[in-house]
Length: 286
Image 1 (cartoon, rainbow, N blue to C red):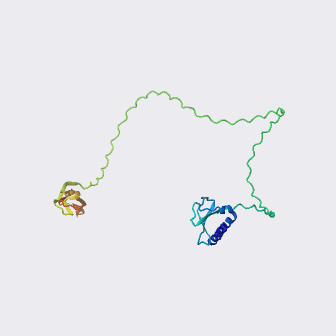
Image 2 (image 1 turned 90 degrees about the vertical axis):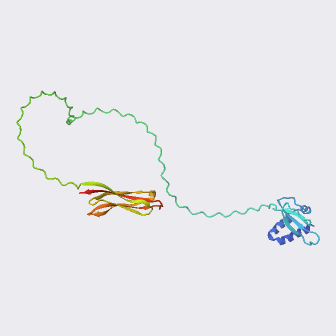
Image 3 (image 1 turned 180 degrees about the horizontal axis):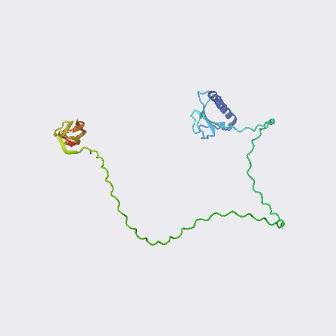
């Protein structure tokens, strides 16, 4: 039976390749005969072992091994086979010989000059020297030169005012002077600006009986008068929808306007009737 199992392992190795062959070879060396003899149809679930099932029985002249998980049972026509994942540790190898000493390296380049060191602490104060001997009395010095004259003093404060003198007597009246000559007449003044007279407000209207747009109204001054200003206004139910487009003096006679014209239109359009009044402020201008 043992030879049949090993033969079955070898057959399985031949089918699975060289990598598994190494593992099976370890099994042949490390699994004791007692372990092989105790083959069962179930595994104990030990994950430290490799678990396999070997097929055998009638009609199977060769044993076939398949690797299964730790907790899986073998089939009825298979026997369980376990072996170690890792072999026992080998003996320690002999110590190698010591290598030869390497050659001495070349001398390195000189390093850069270091930074200037910090200033040293102040030295201790020296002891005081002994007092010297008293010297001889010196000769009398020569007389000093006269000092320069001092600057003039500041001006004194102002004195108090004196008392008032007595009033003098009145003088005699003088004689009257002669009358002066009459002055010459002044030149005539320039004429004043032309005068304005005859103010009149003229009105021209367009009746508020249609919604026609645009509308124009012109207020004309009477003959001889010129327009000084003017304007207009909107009447009727549609007045809120009307805008004044133009309001200006017109009808120039002898260089002076004589009428005032107002132009309007609907904005927005309206179906309500509306009218327009134009006004001209007229007057005579001299």
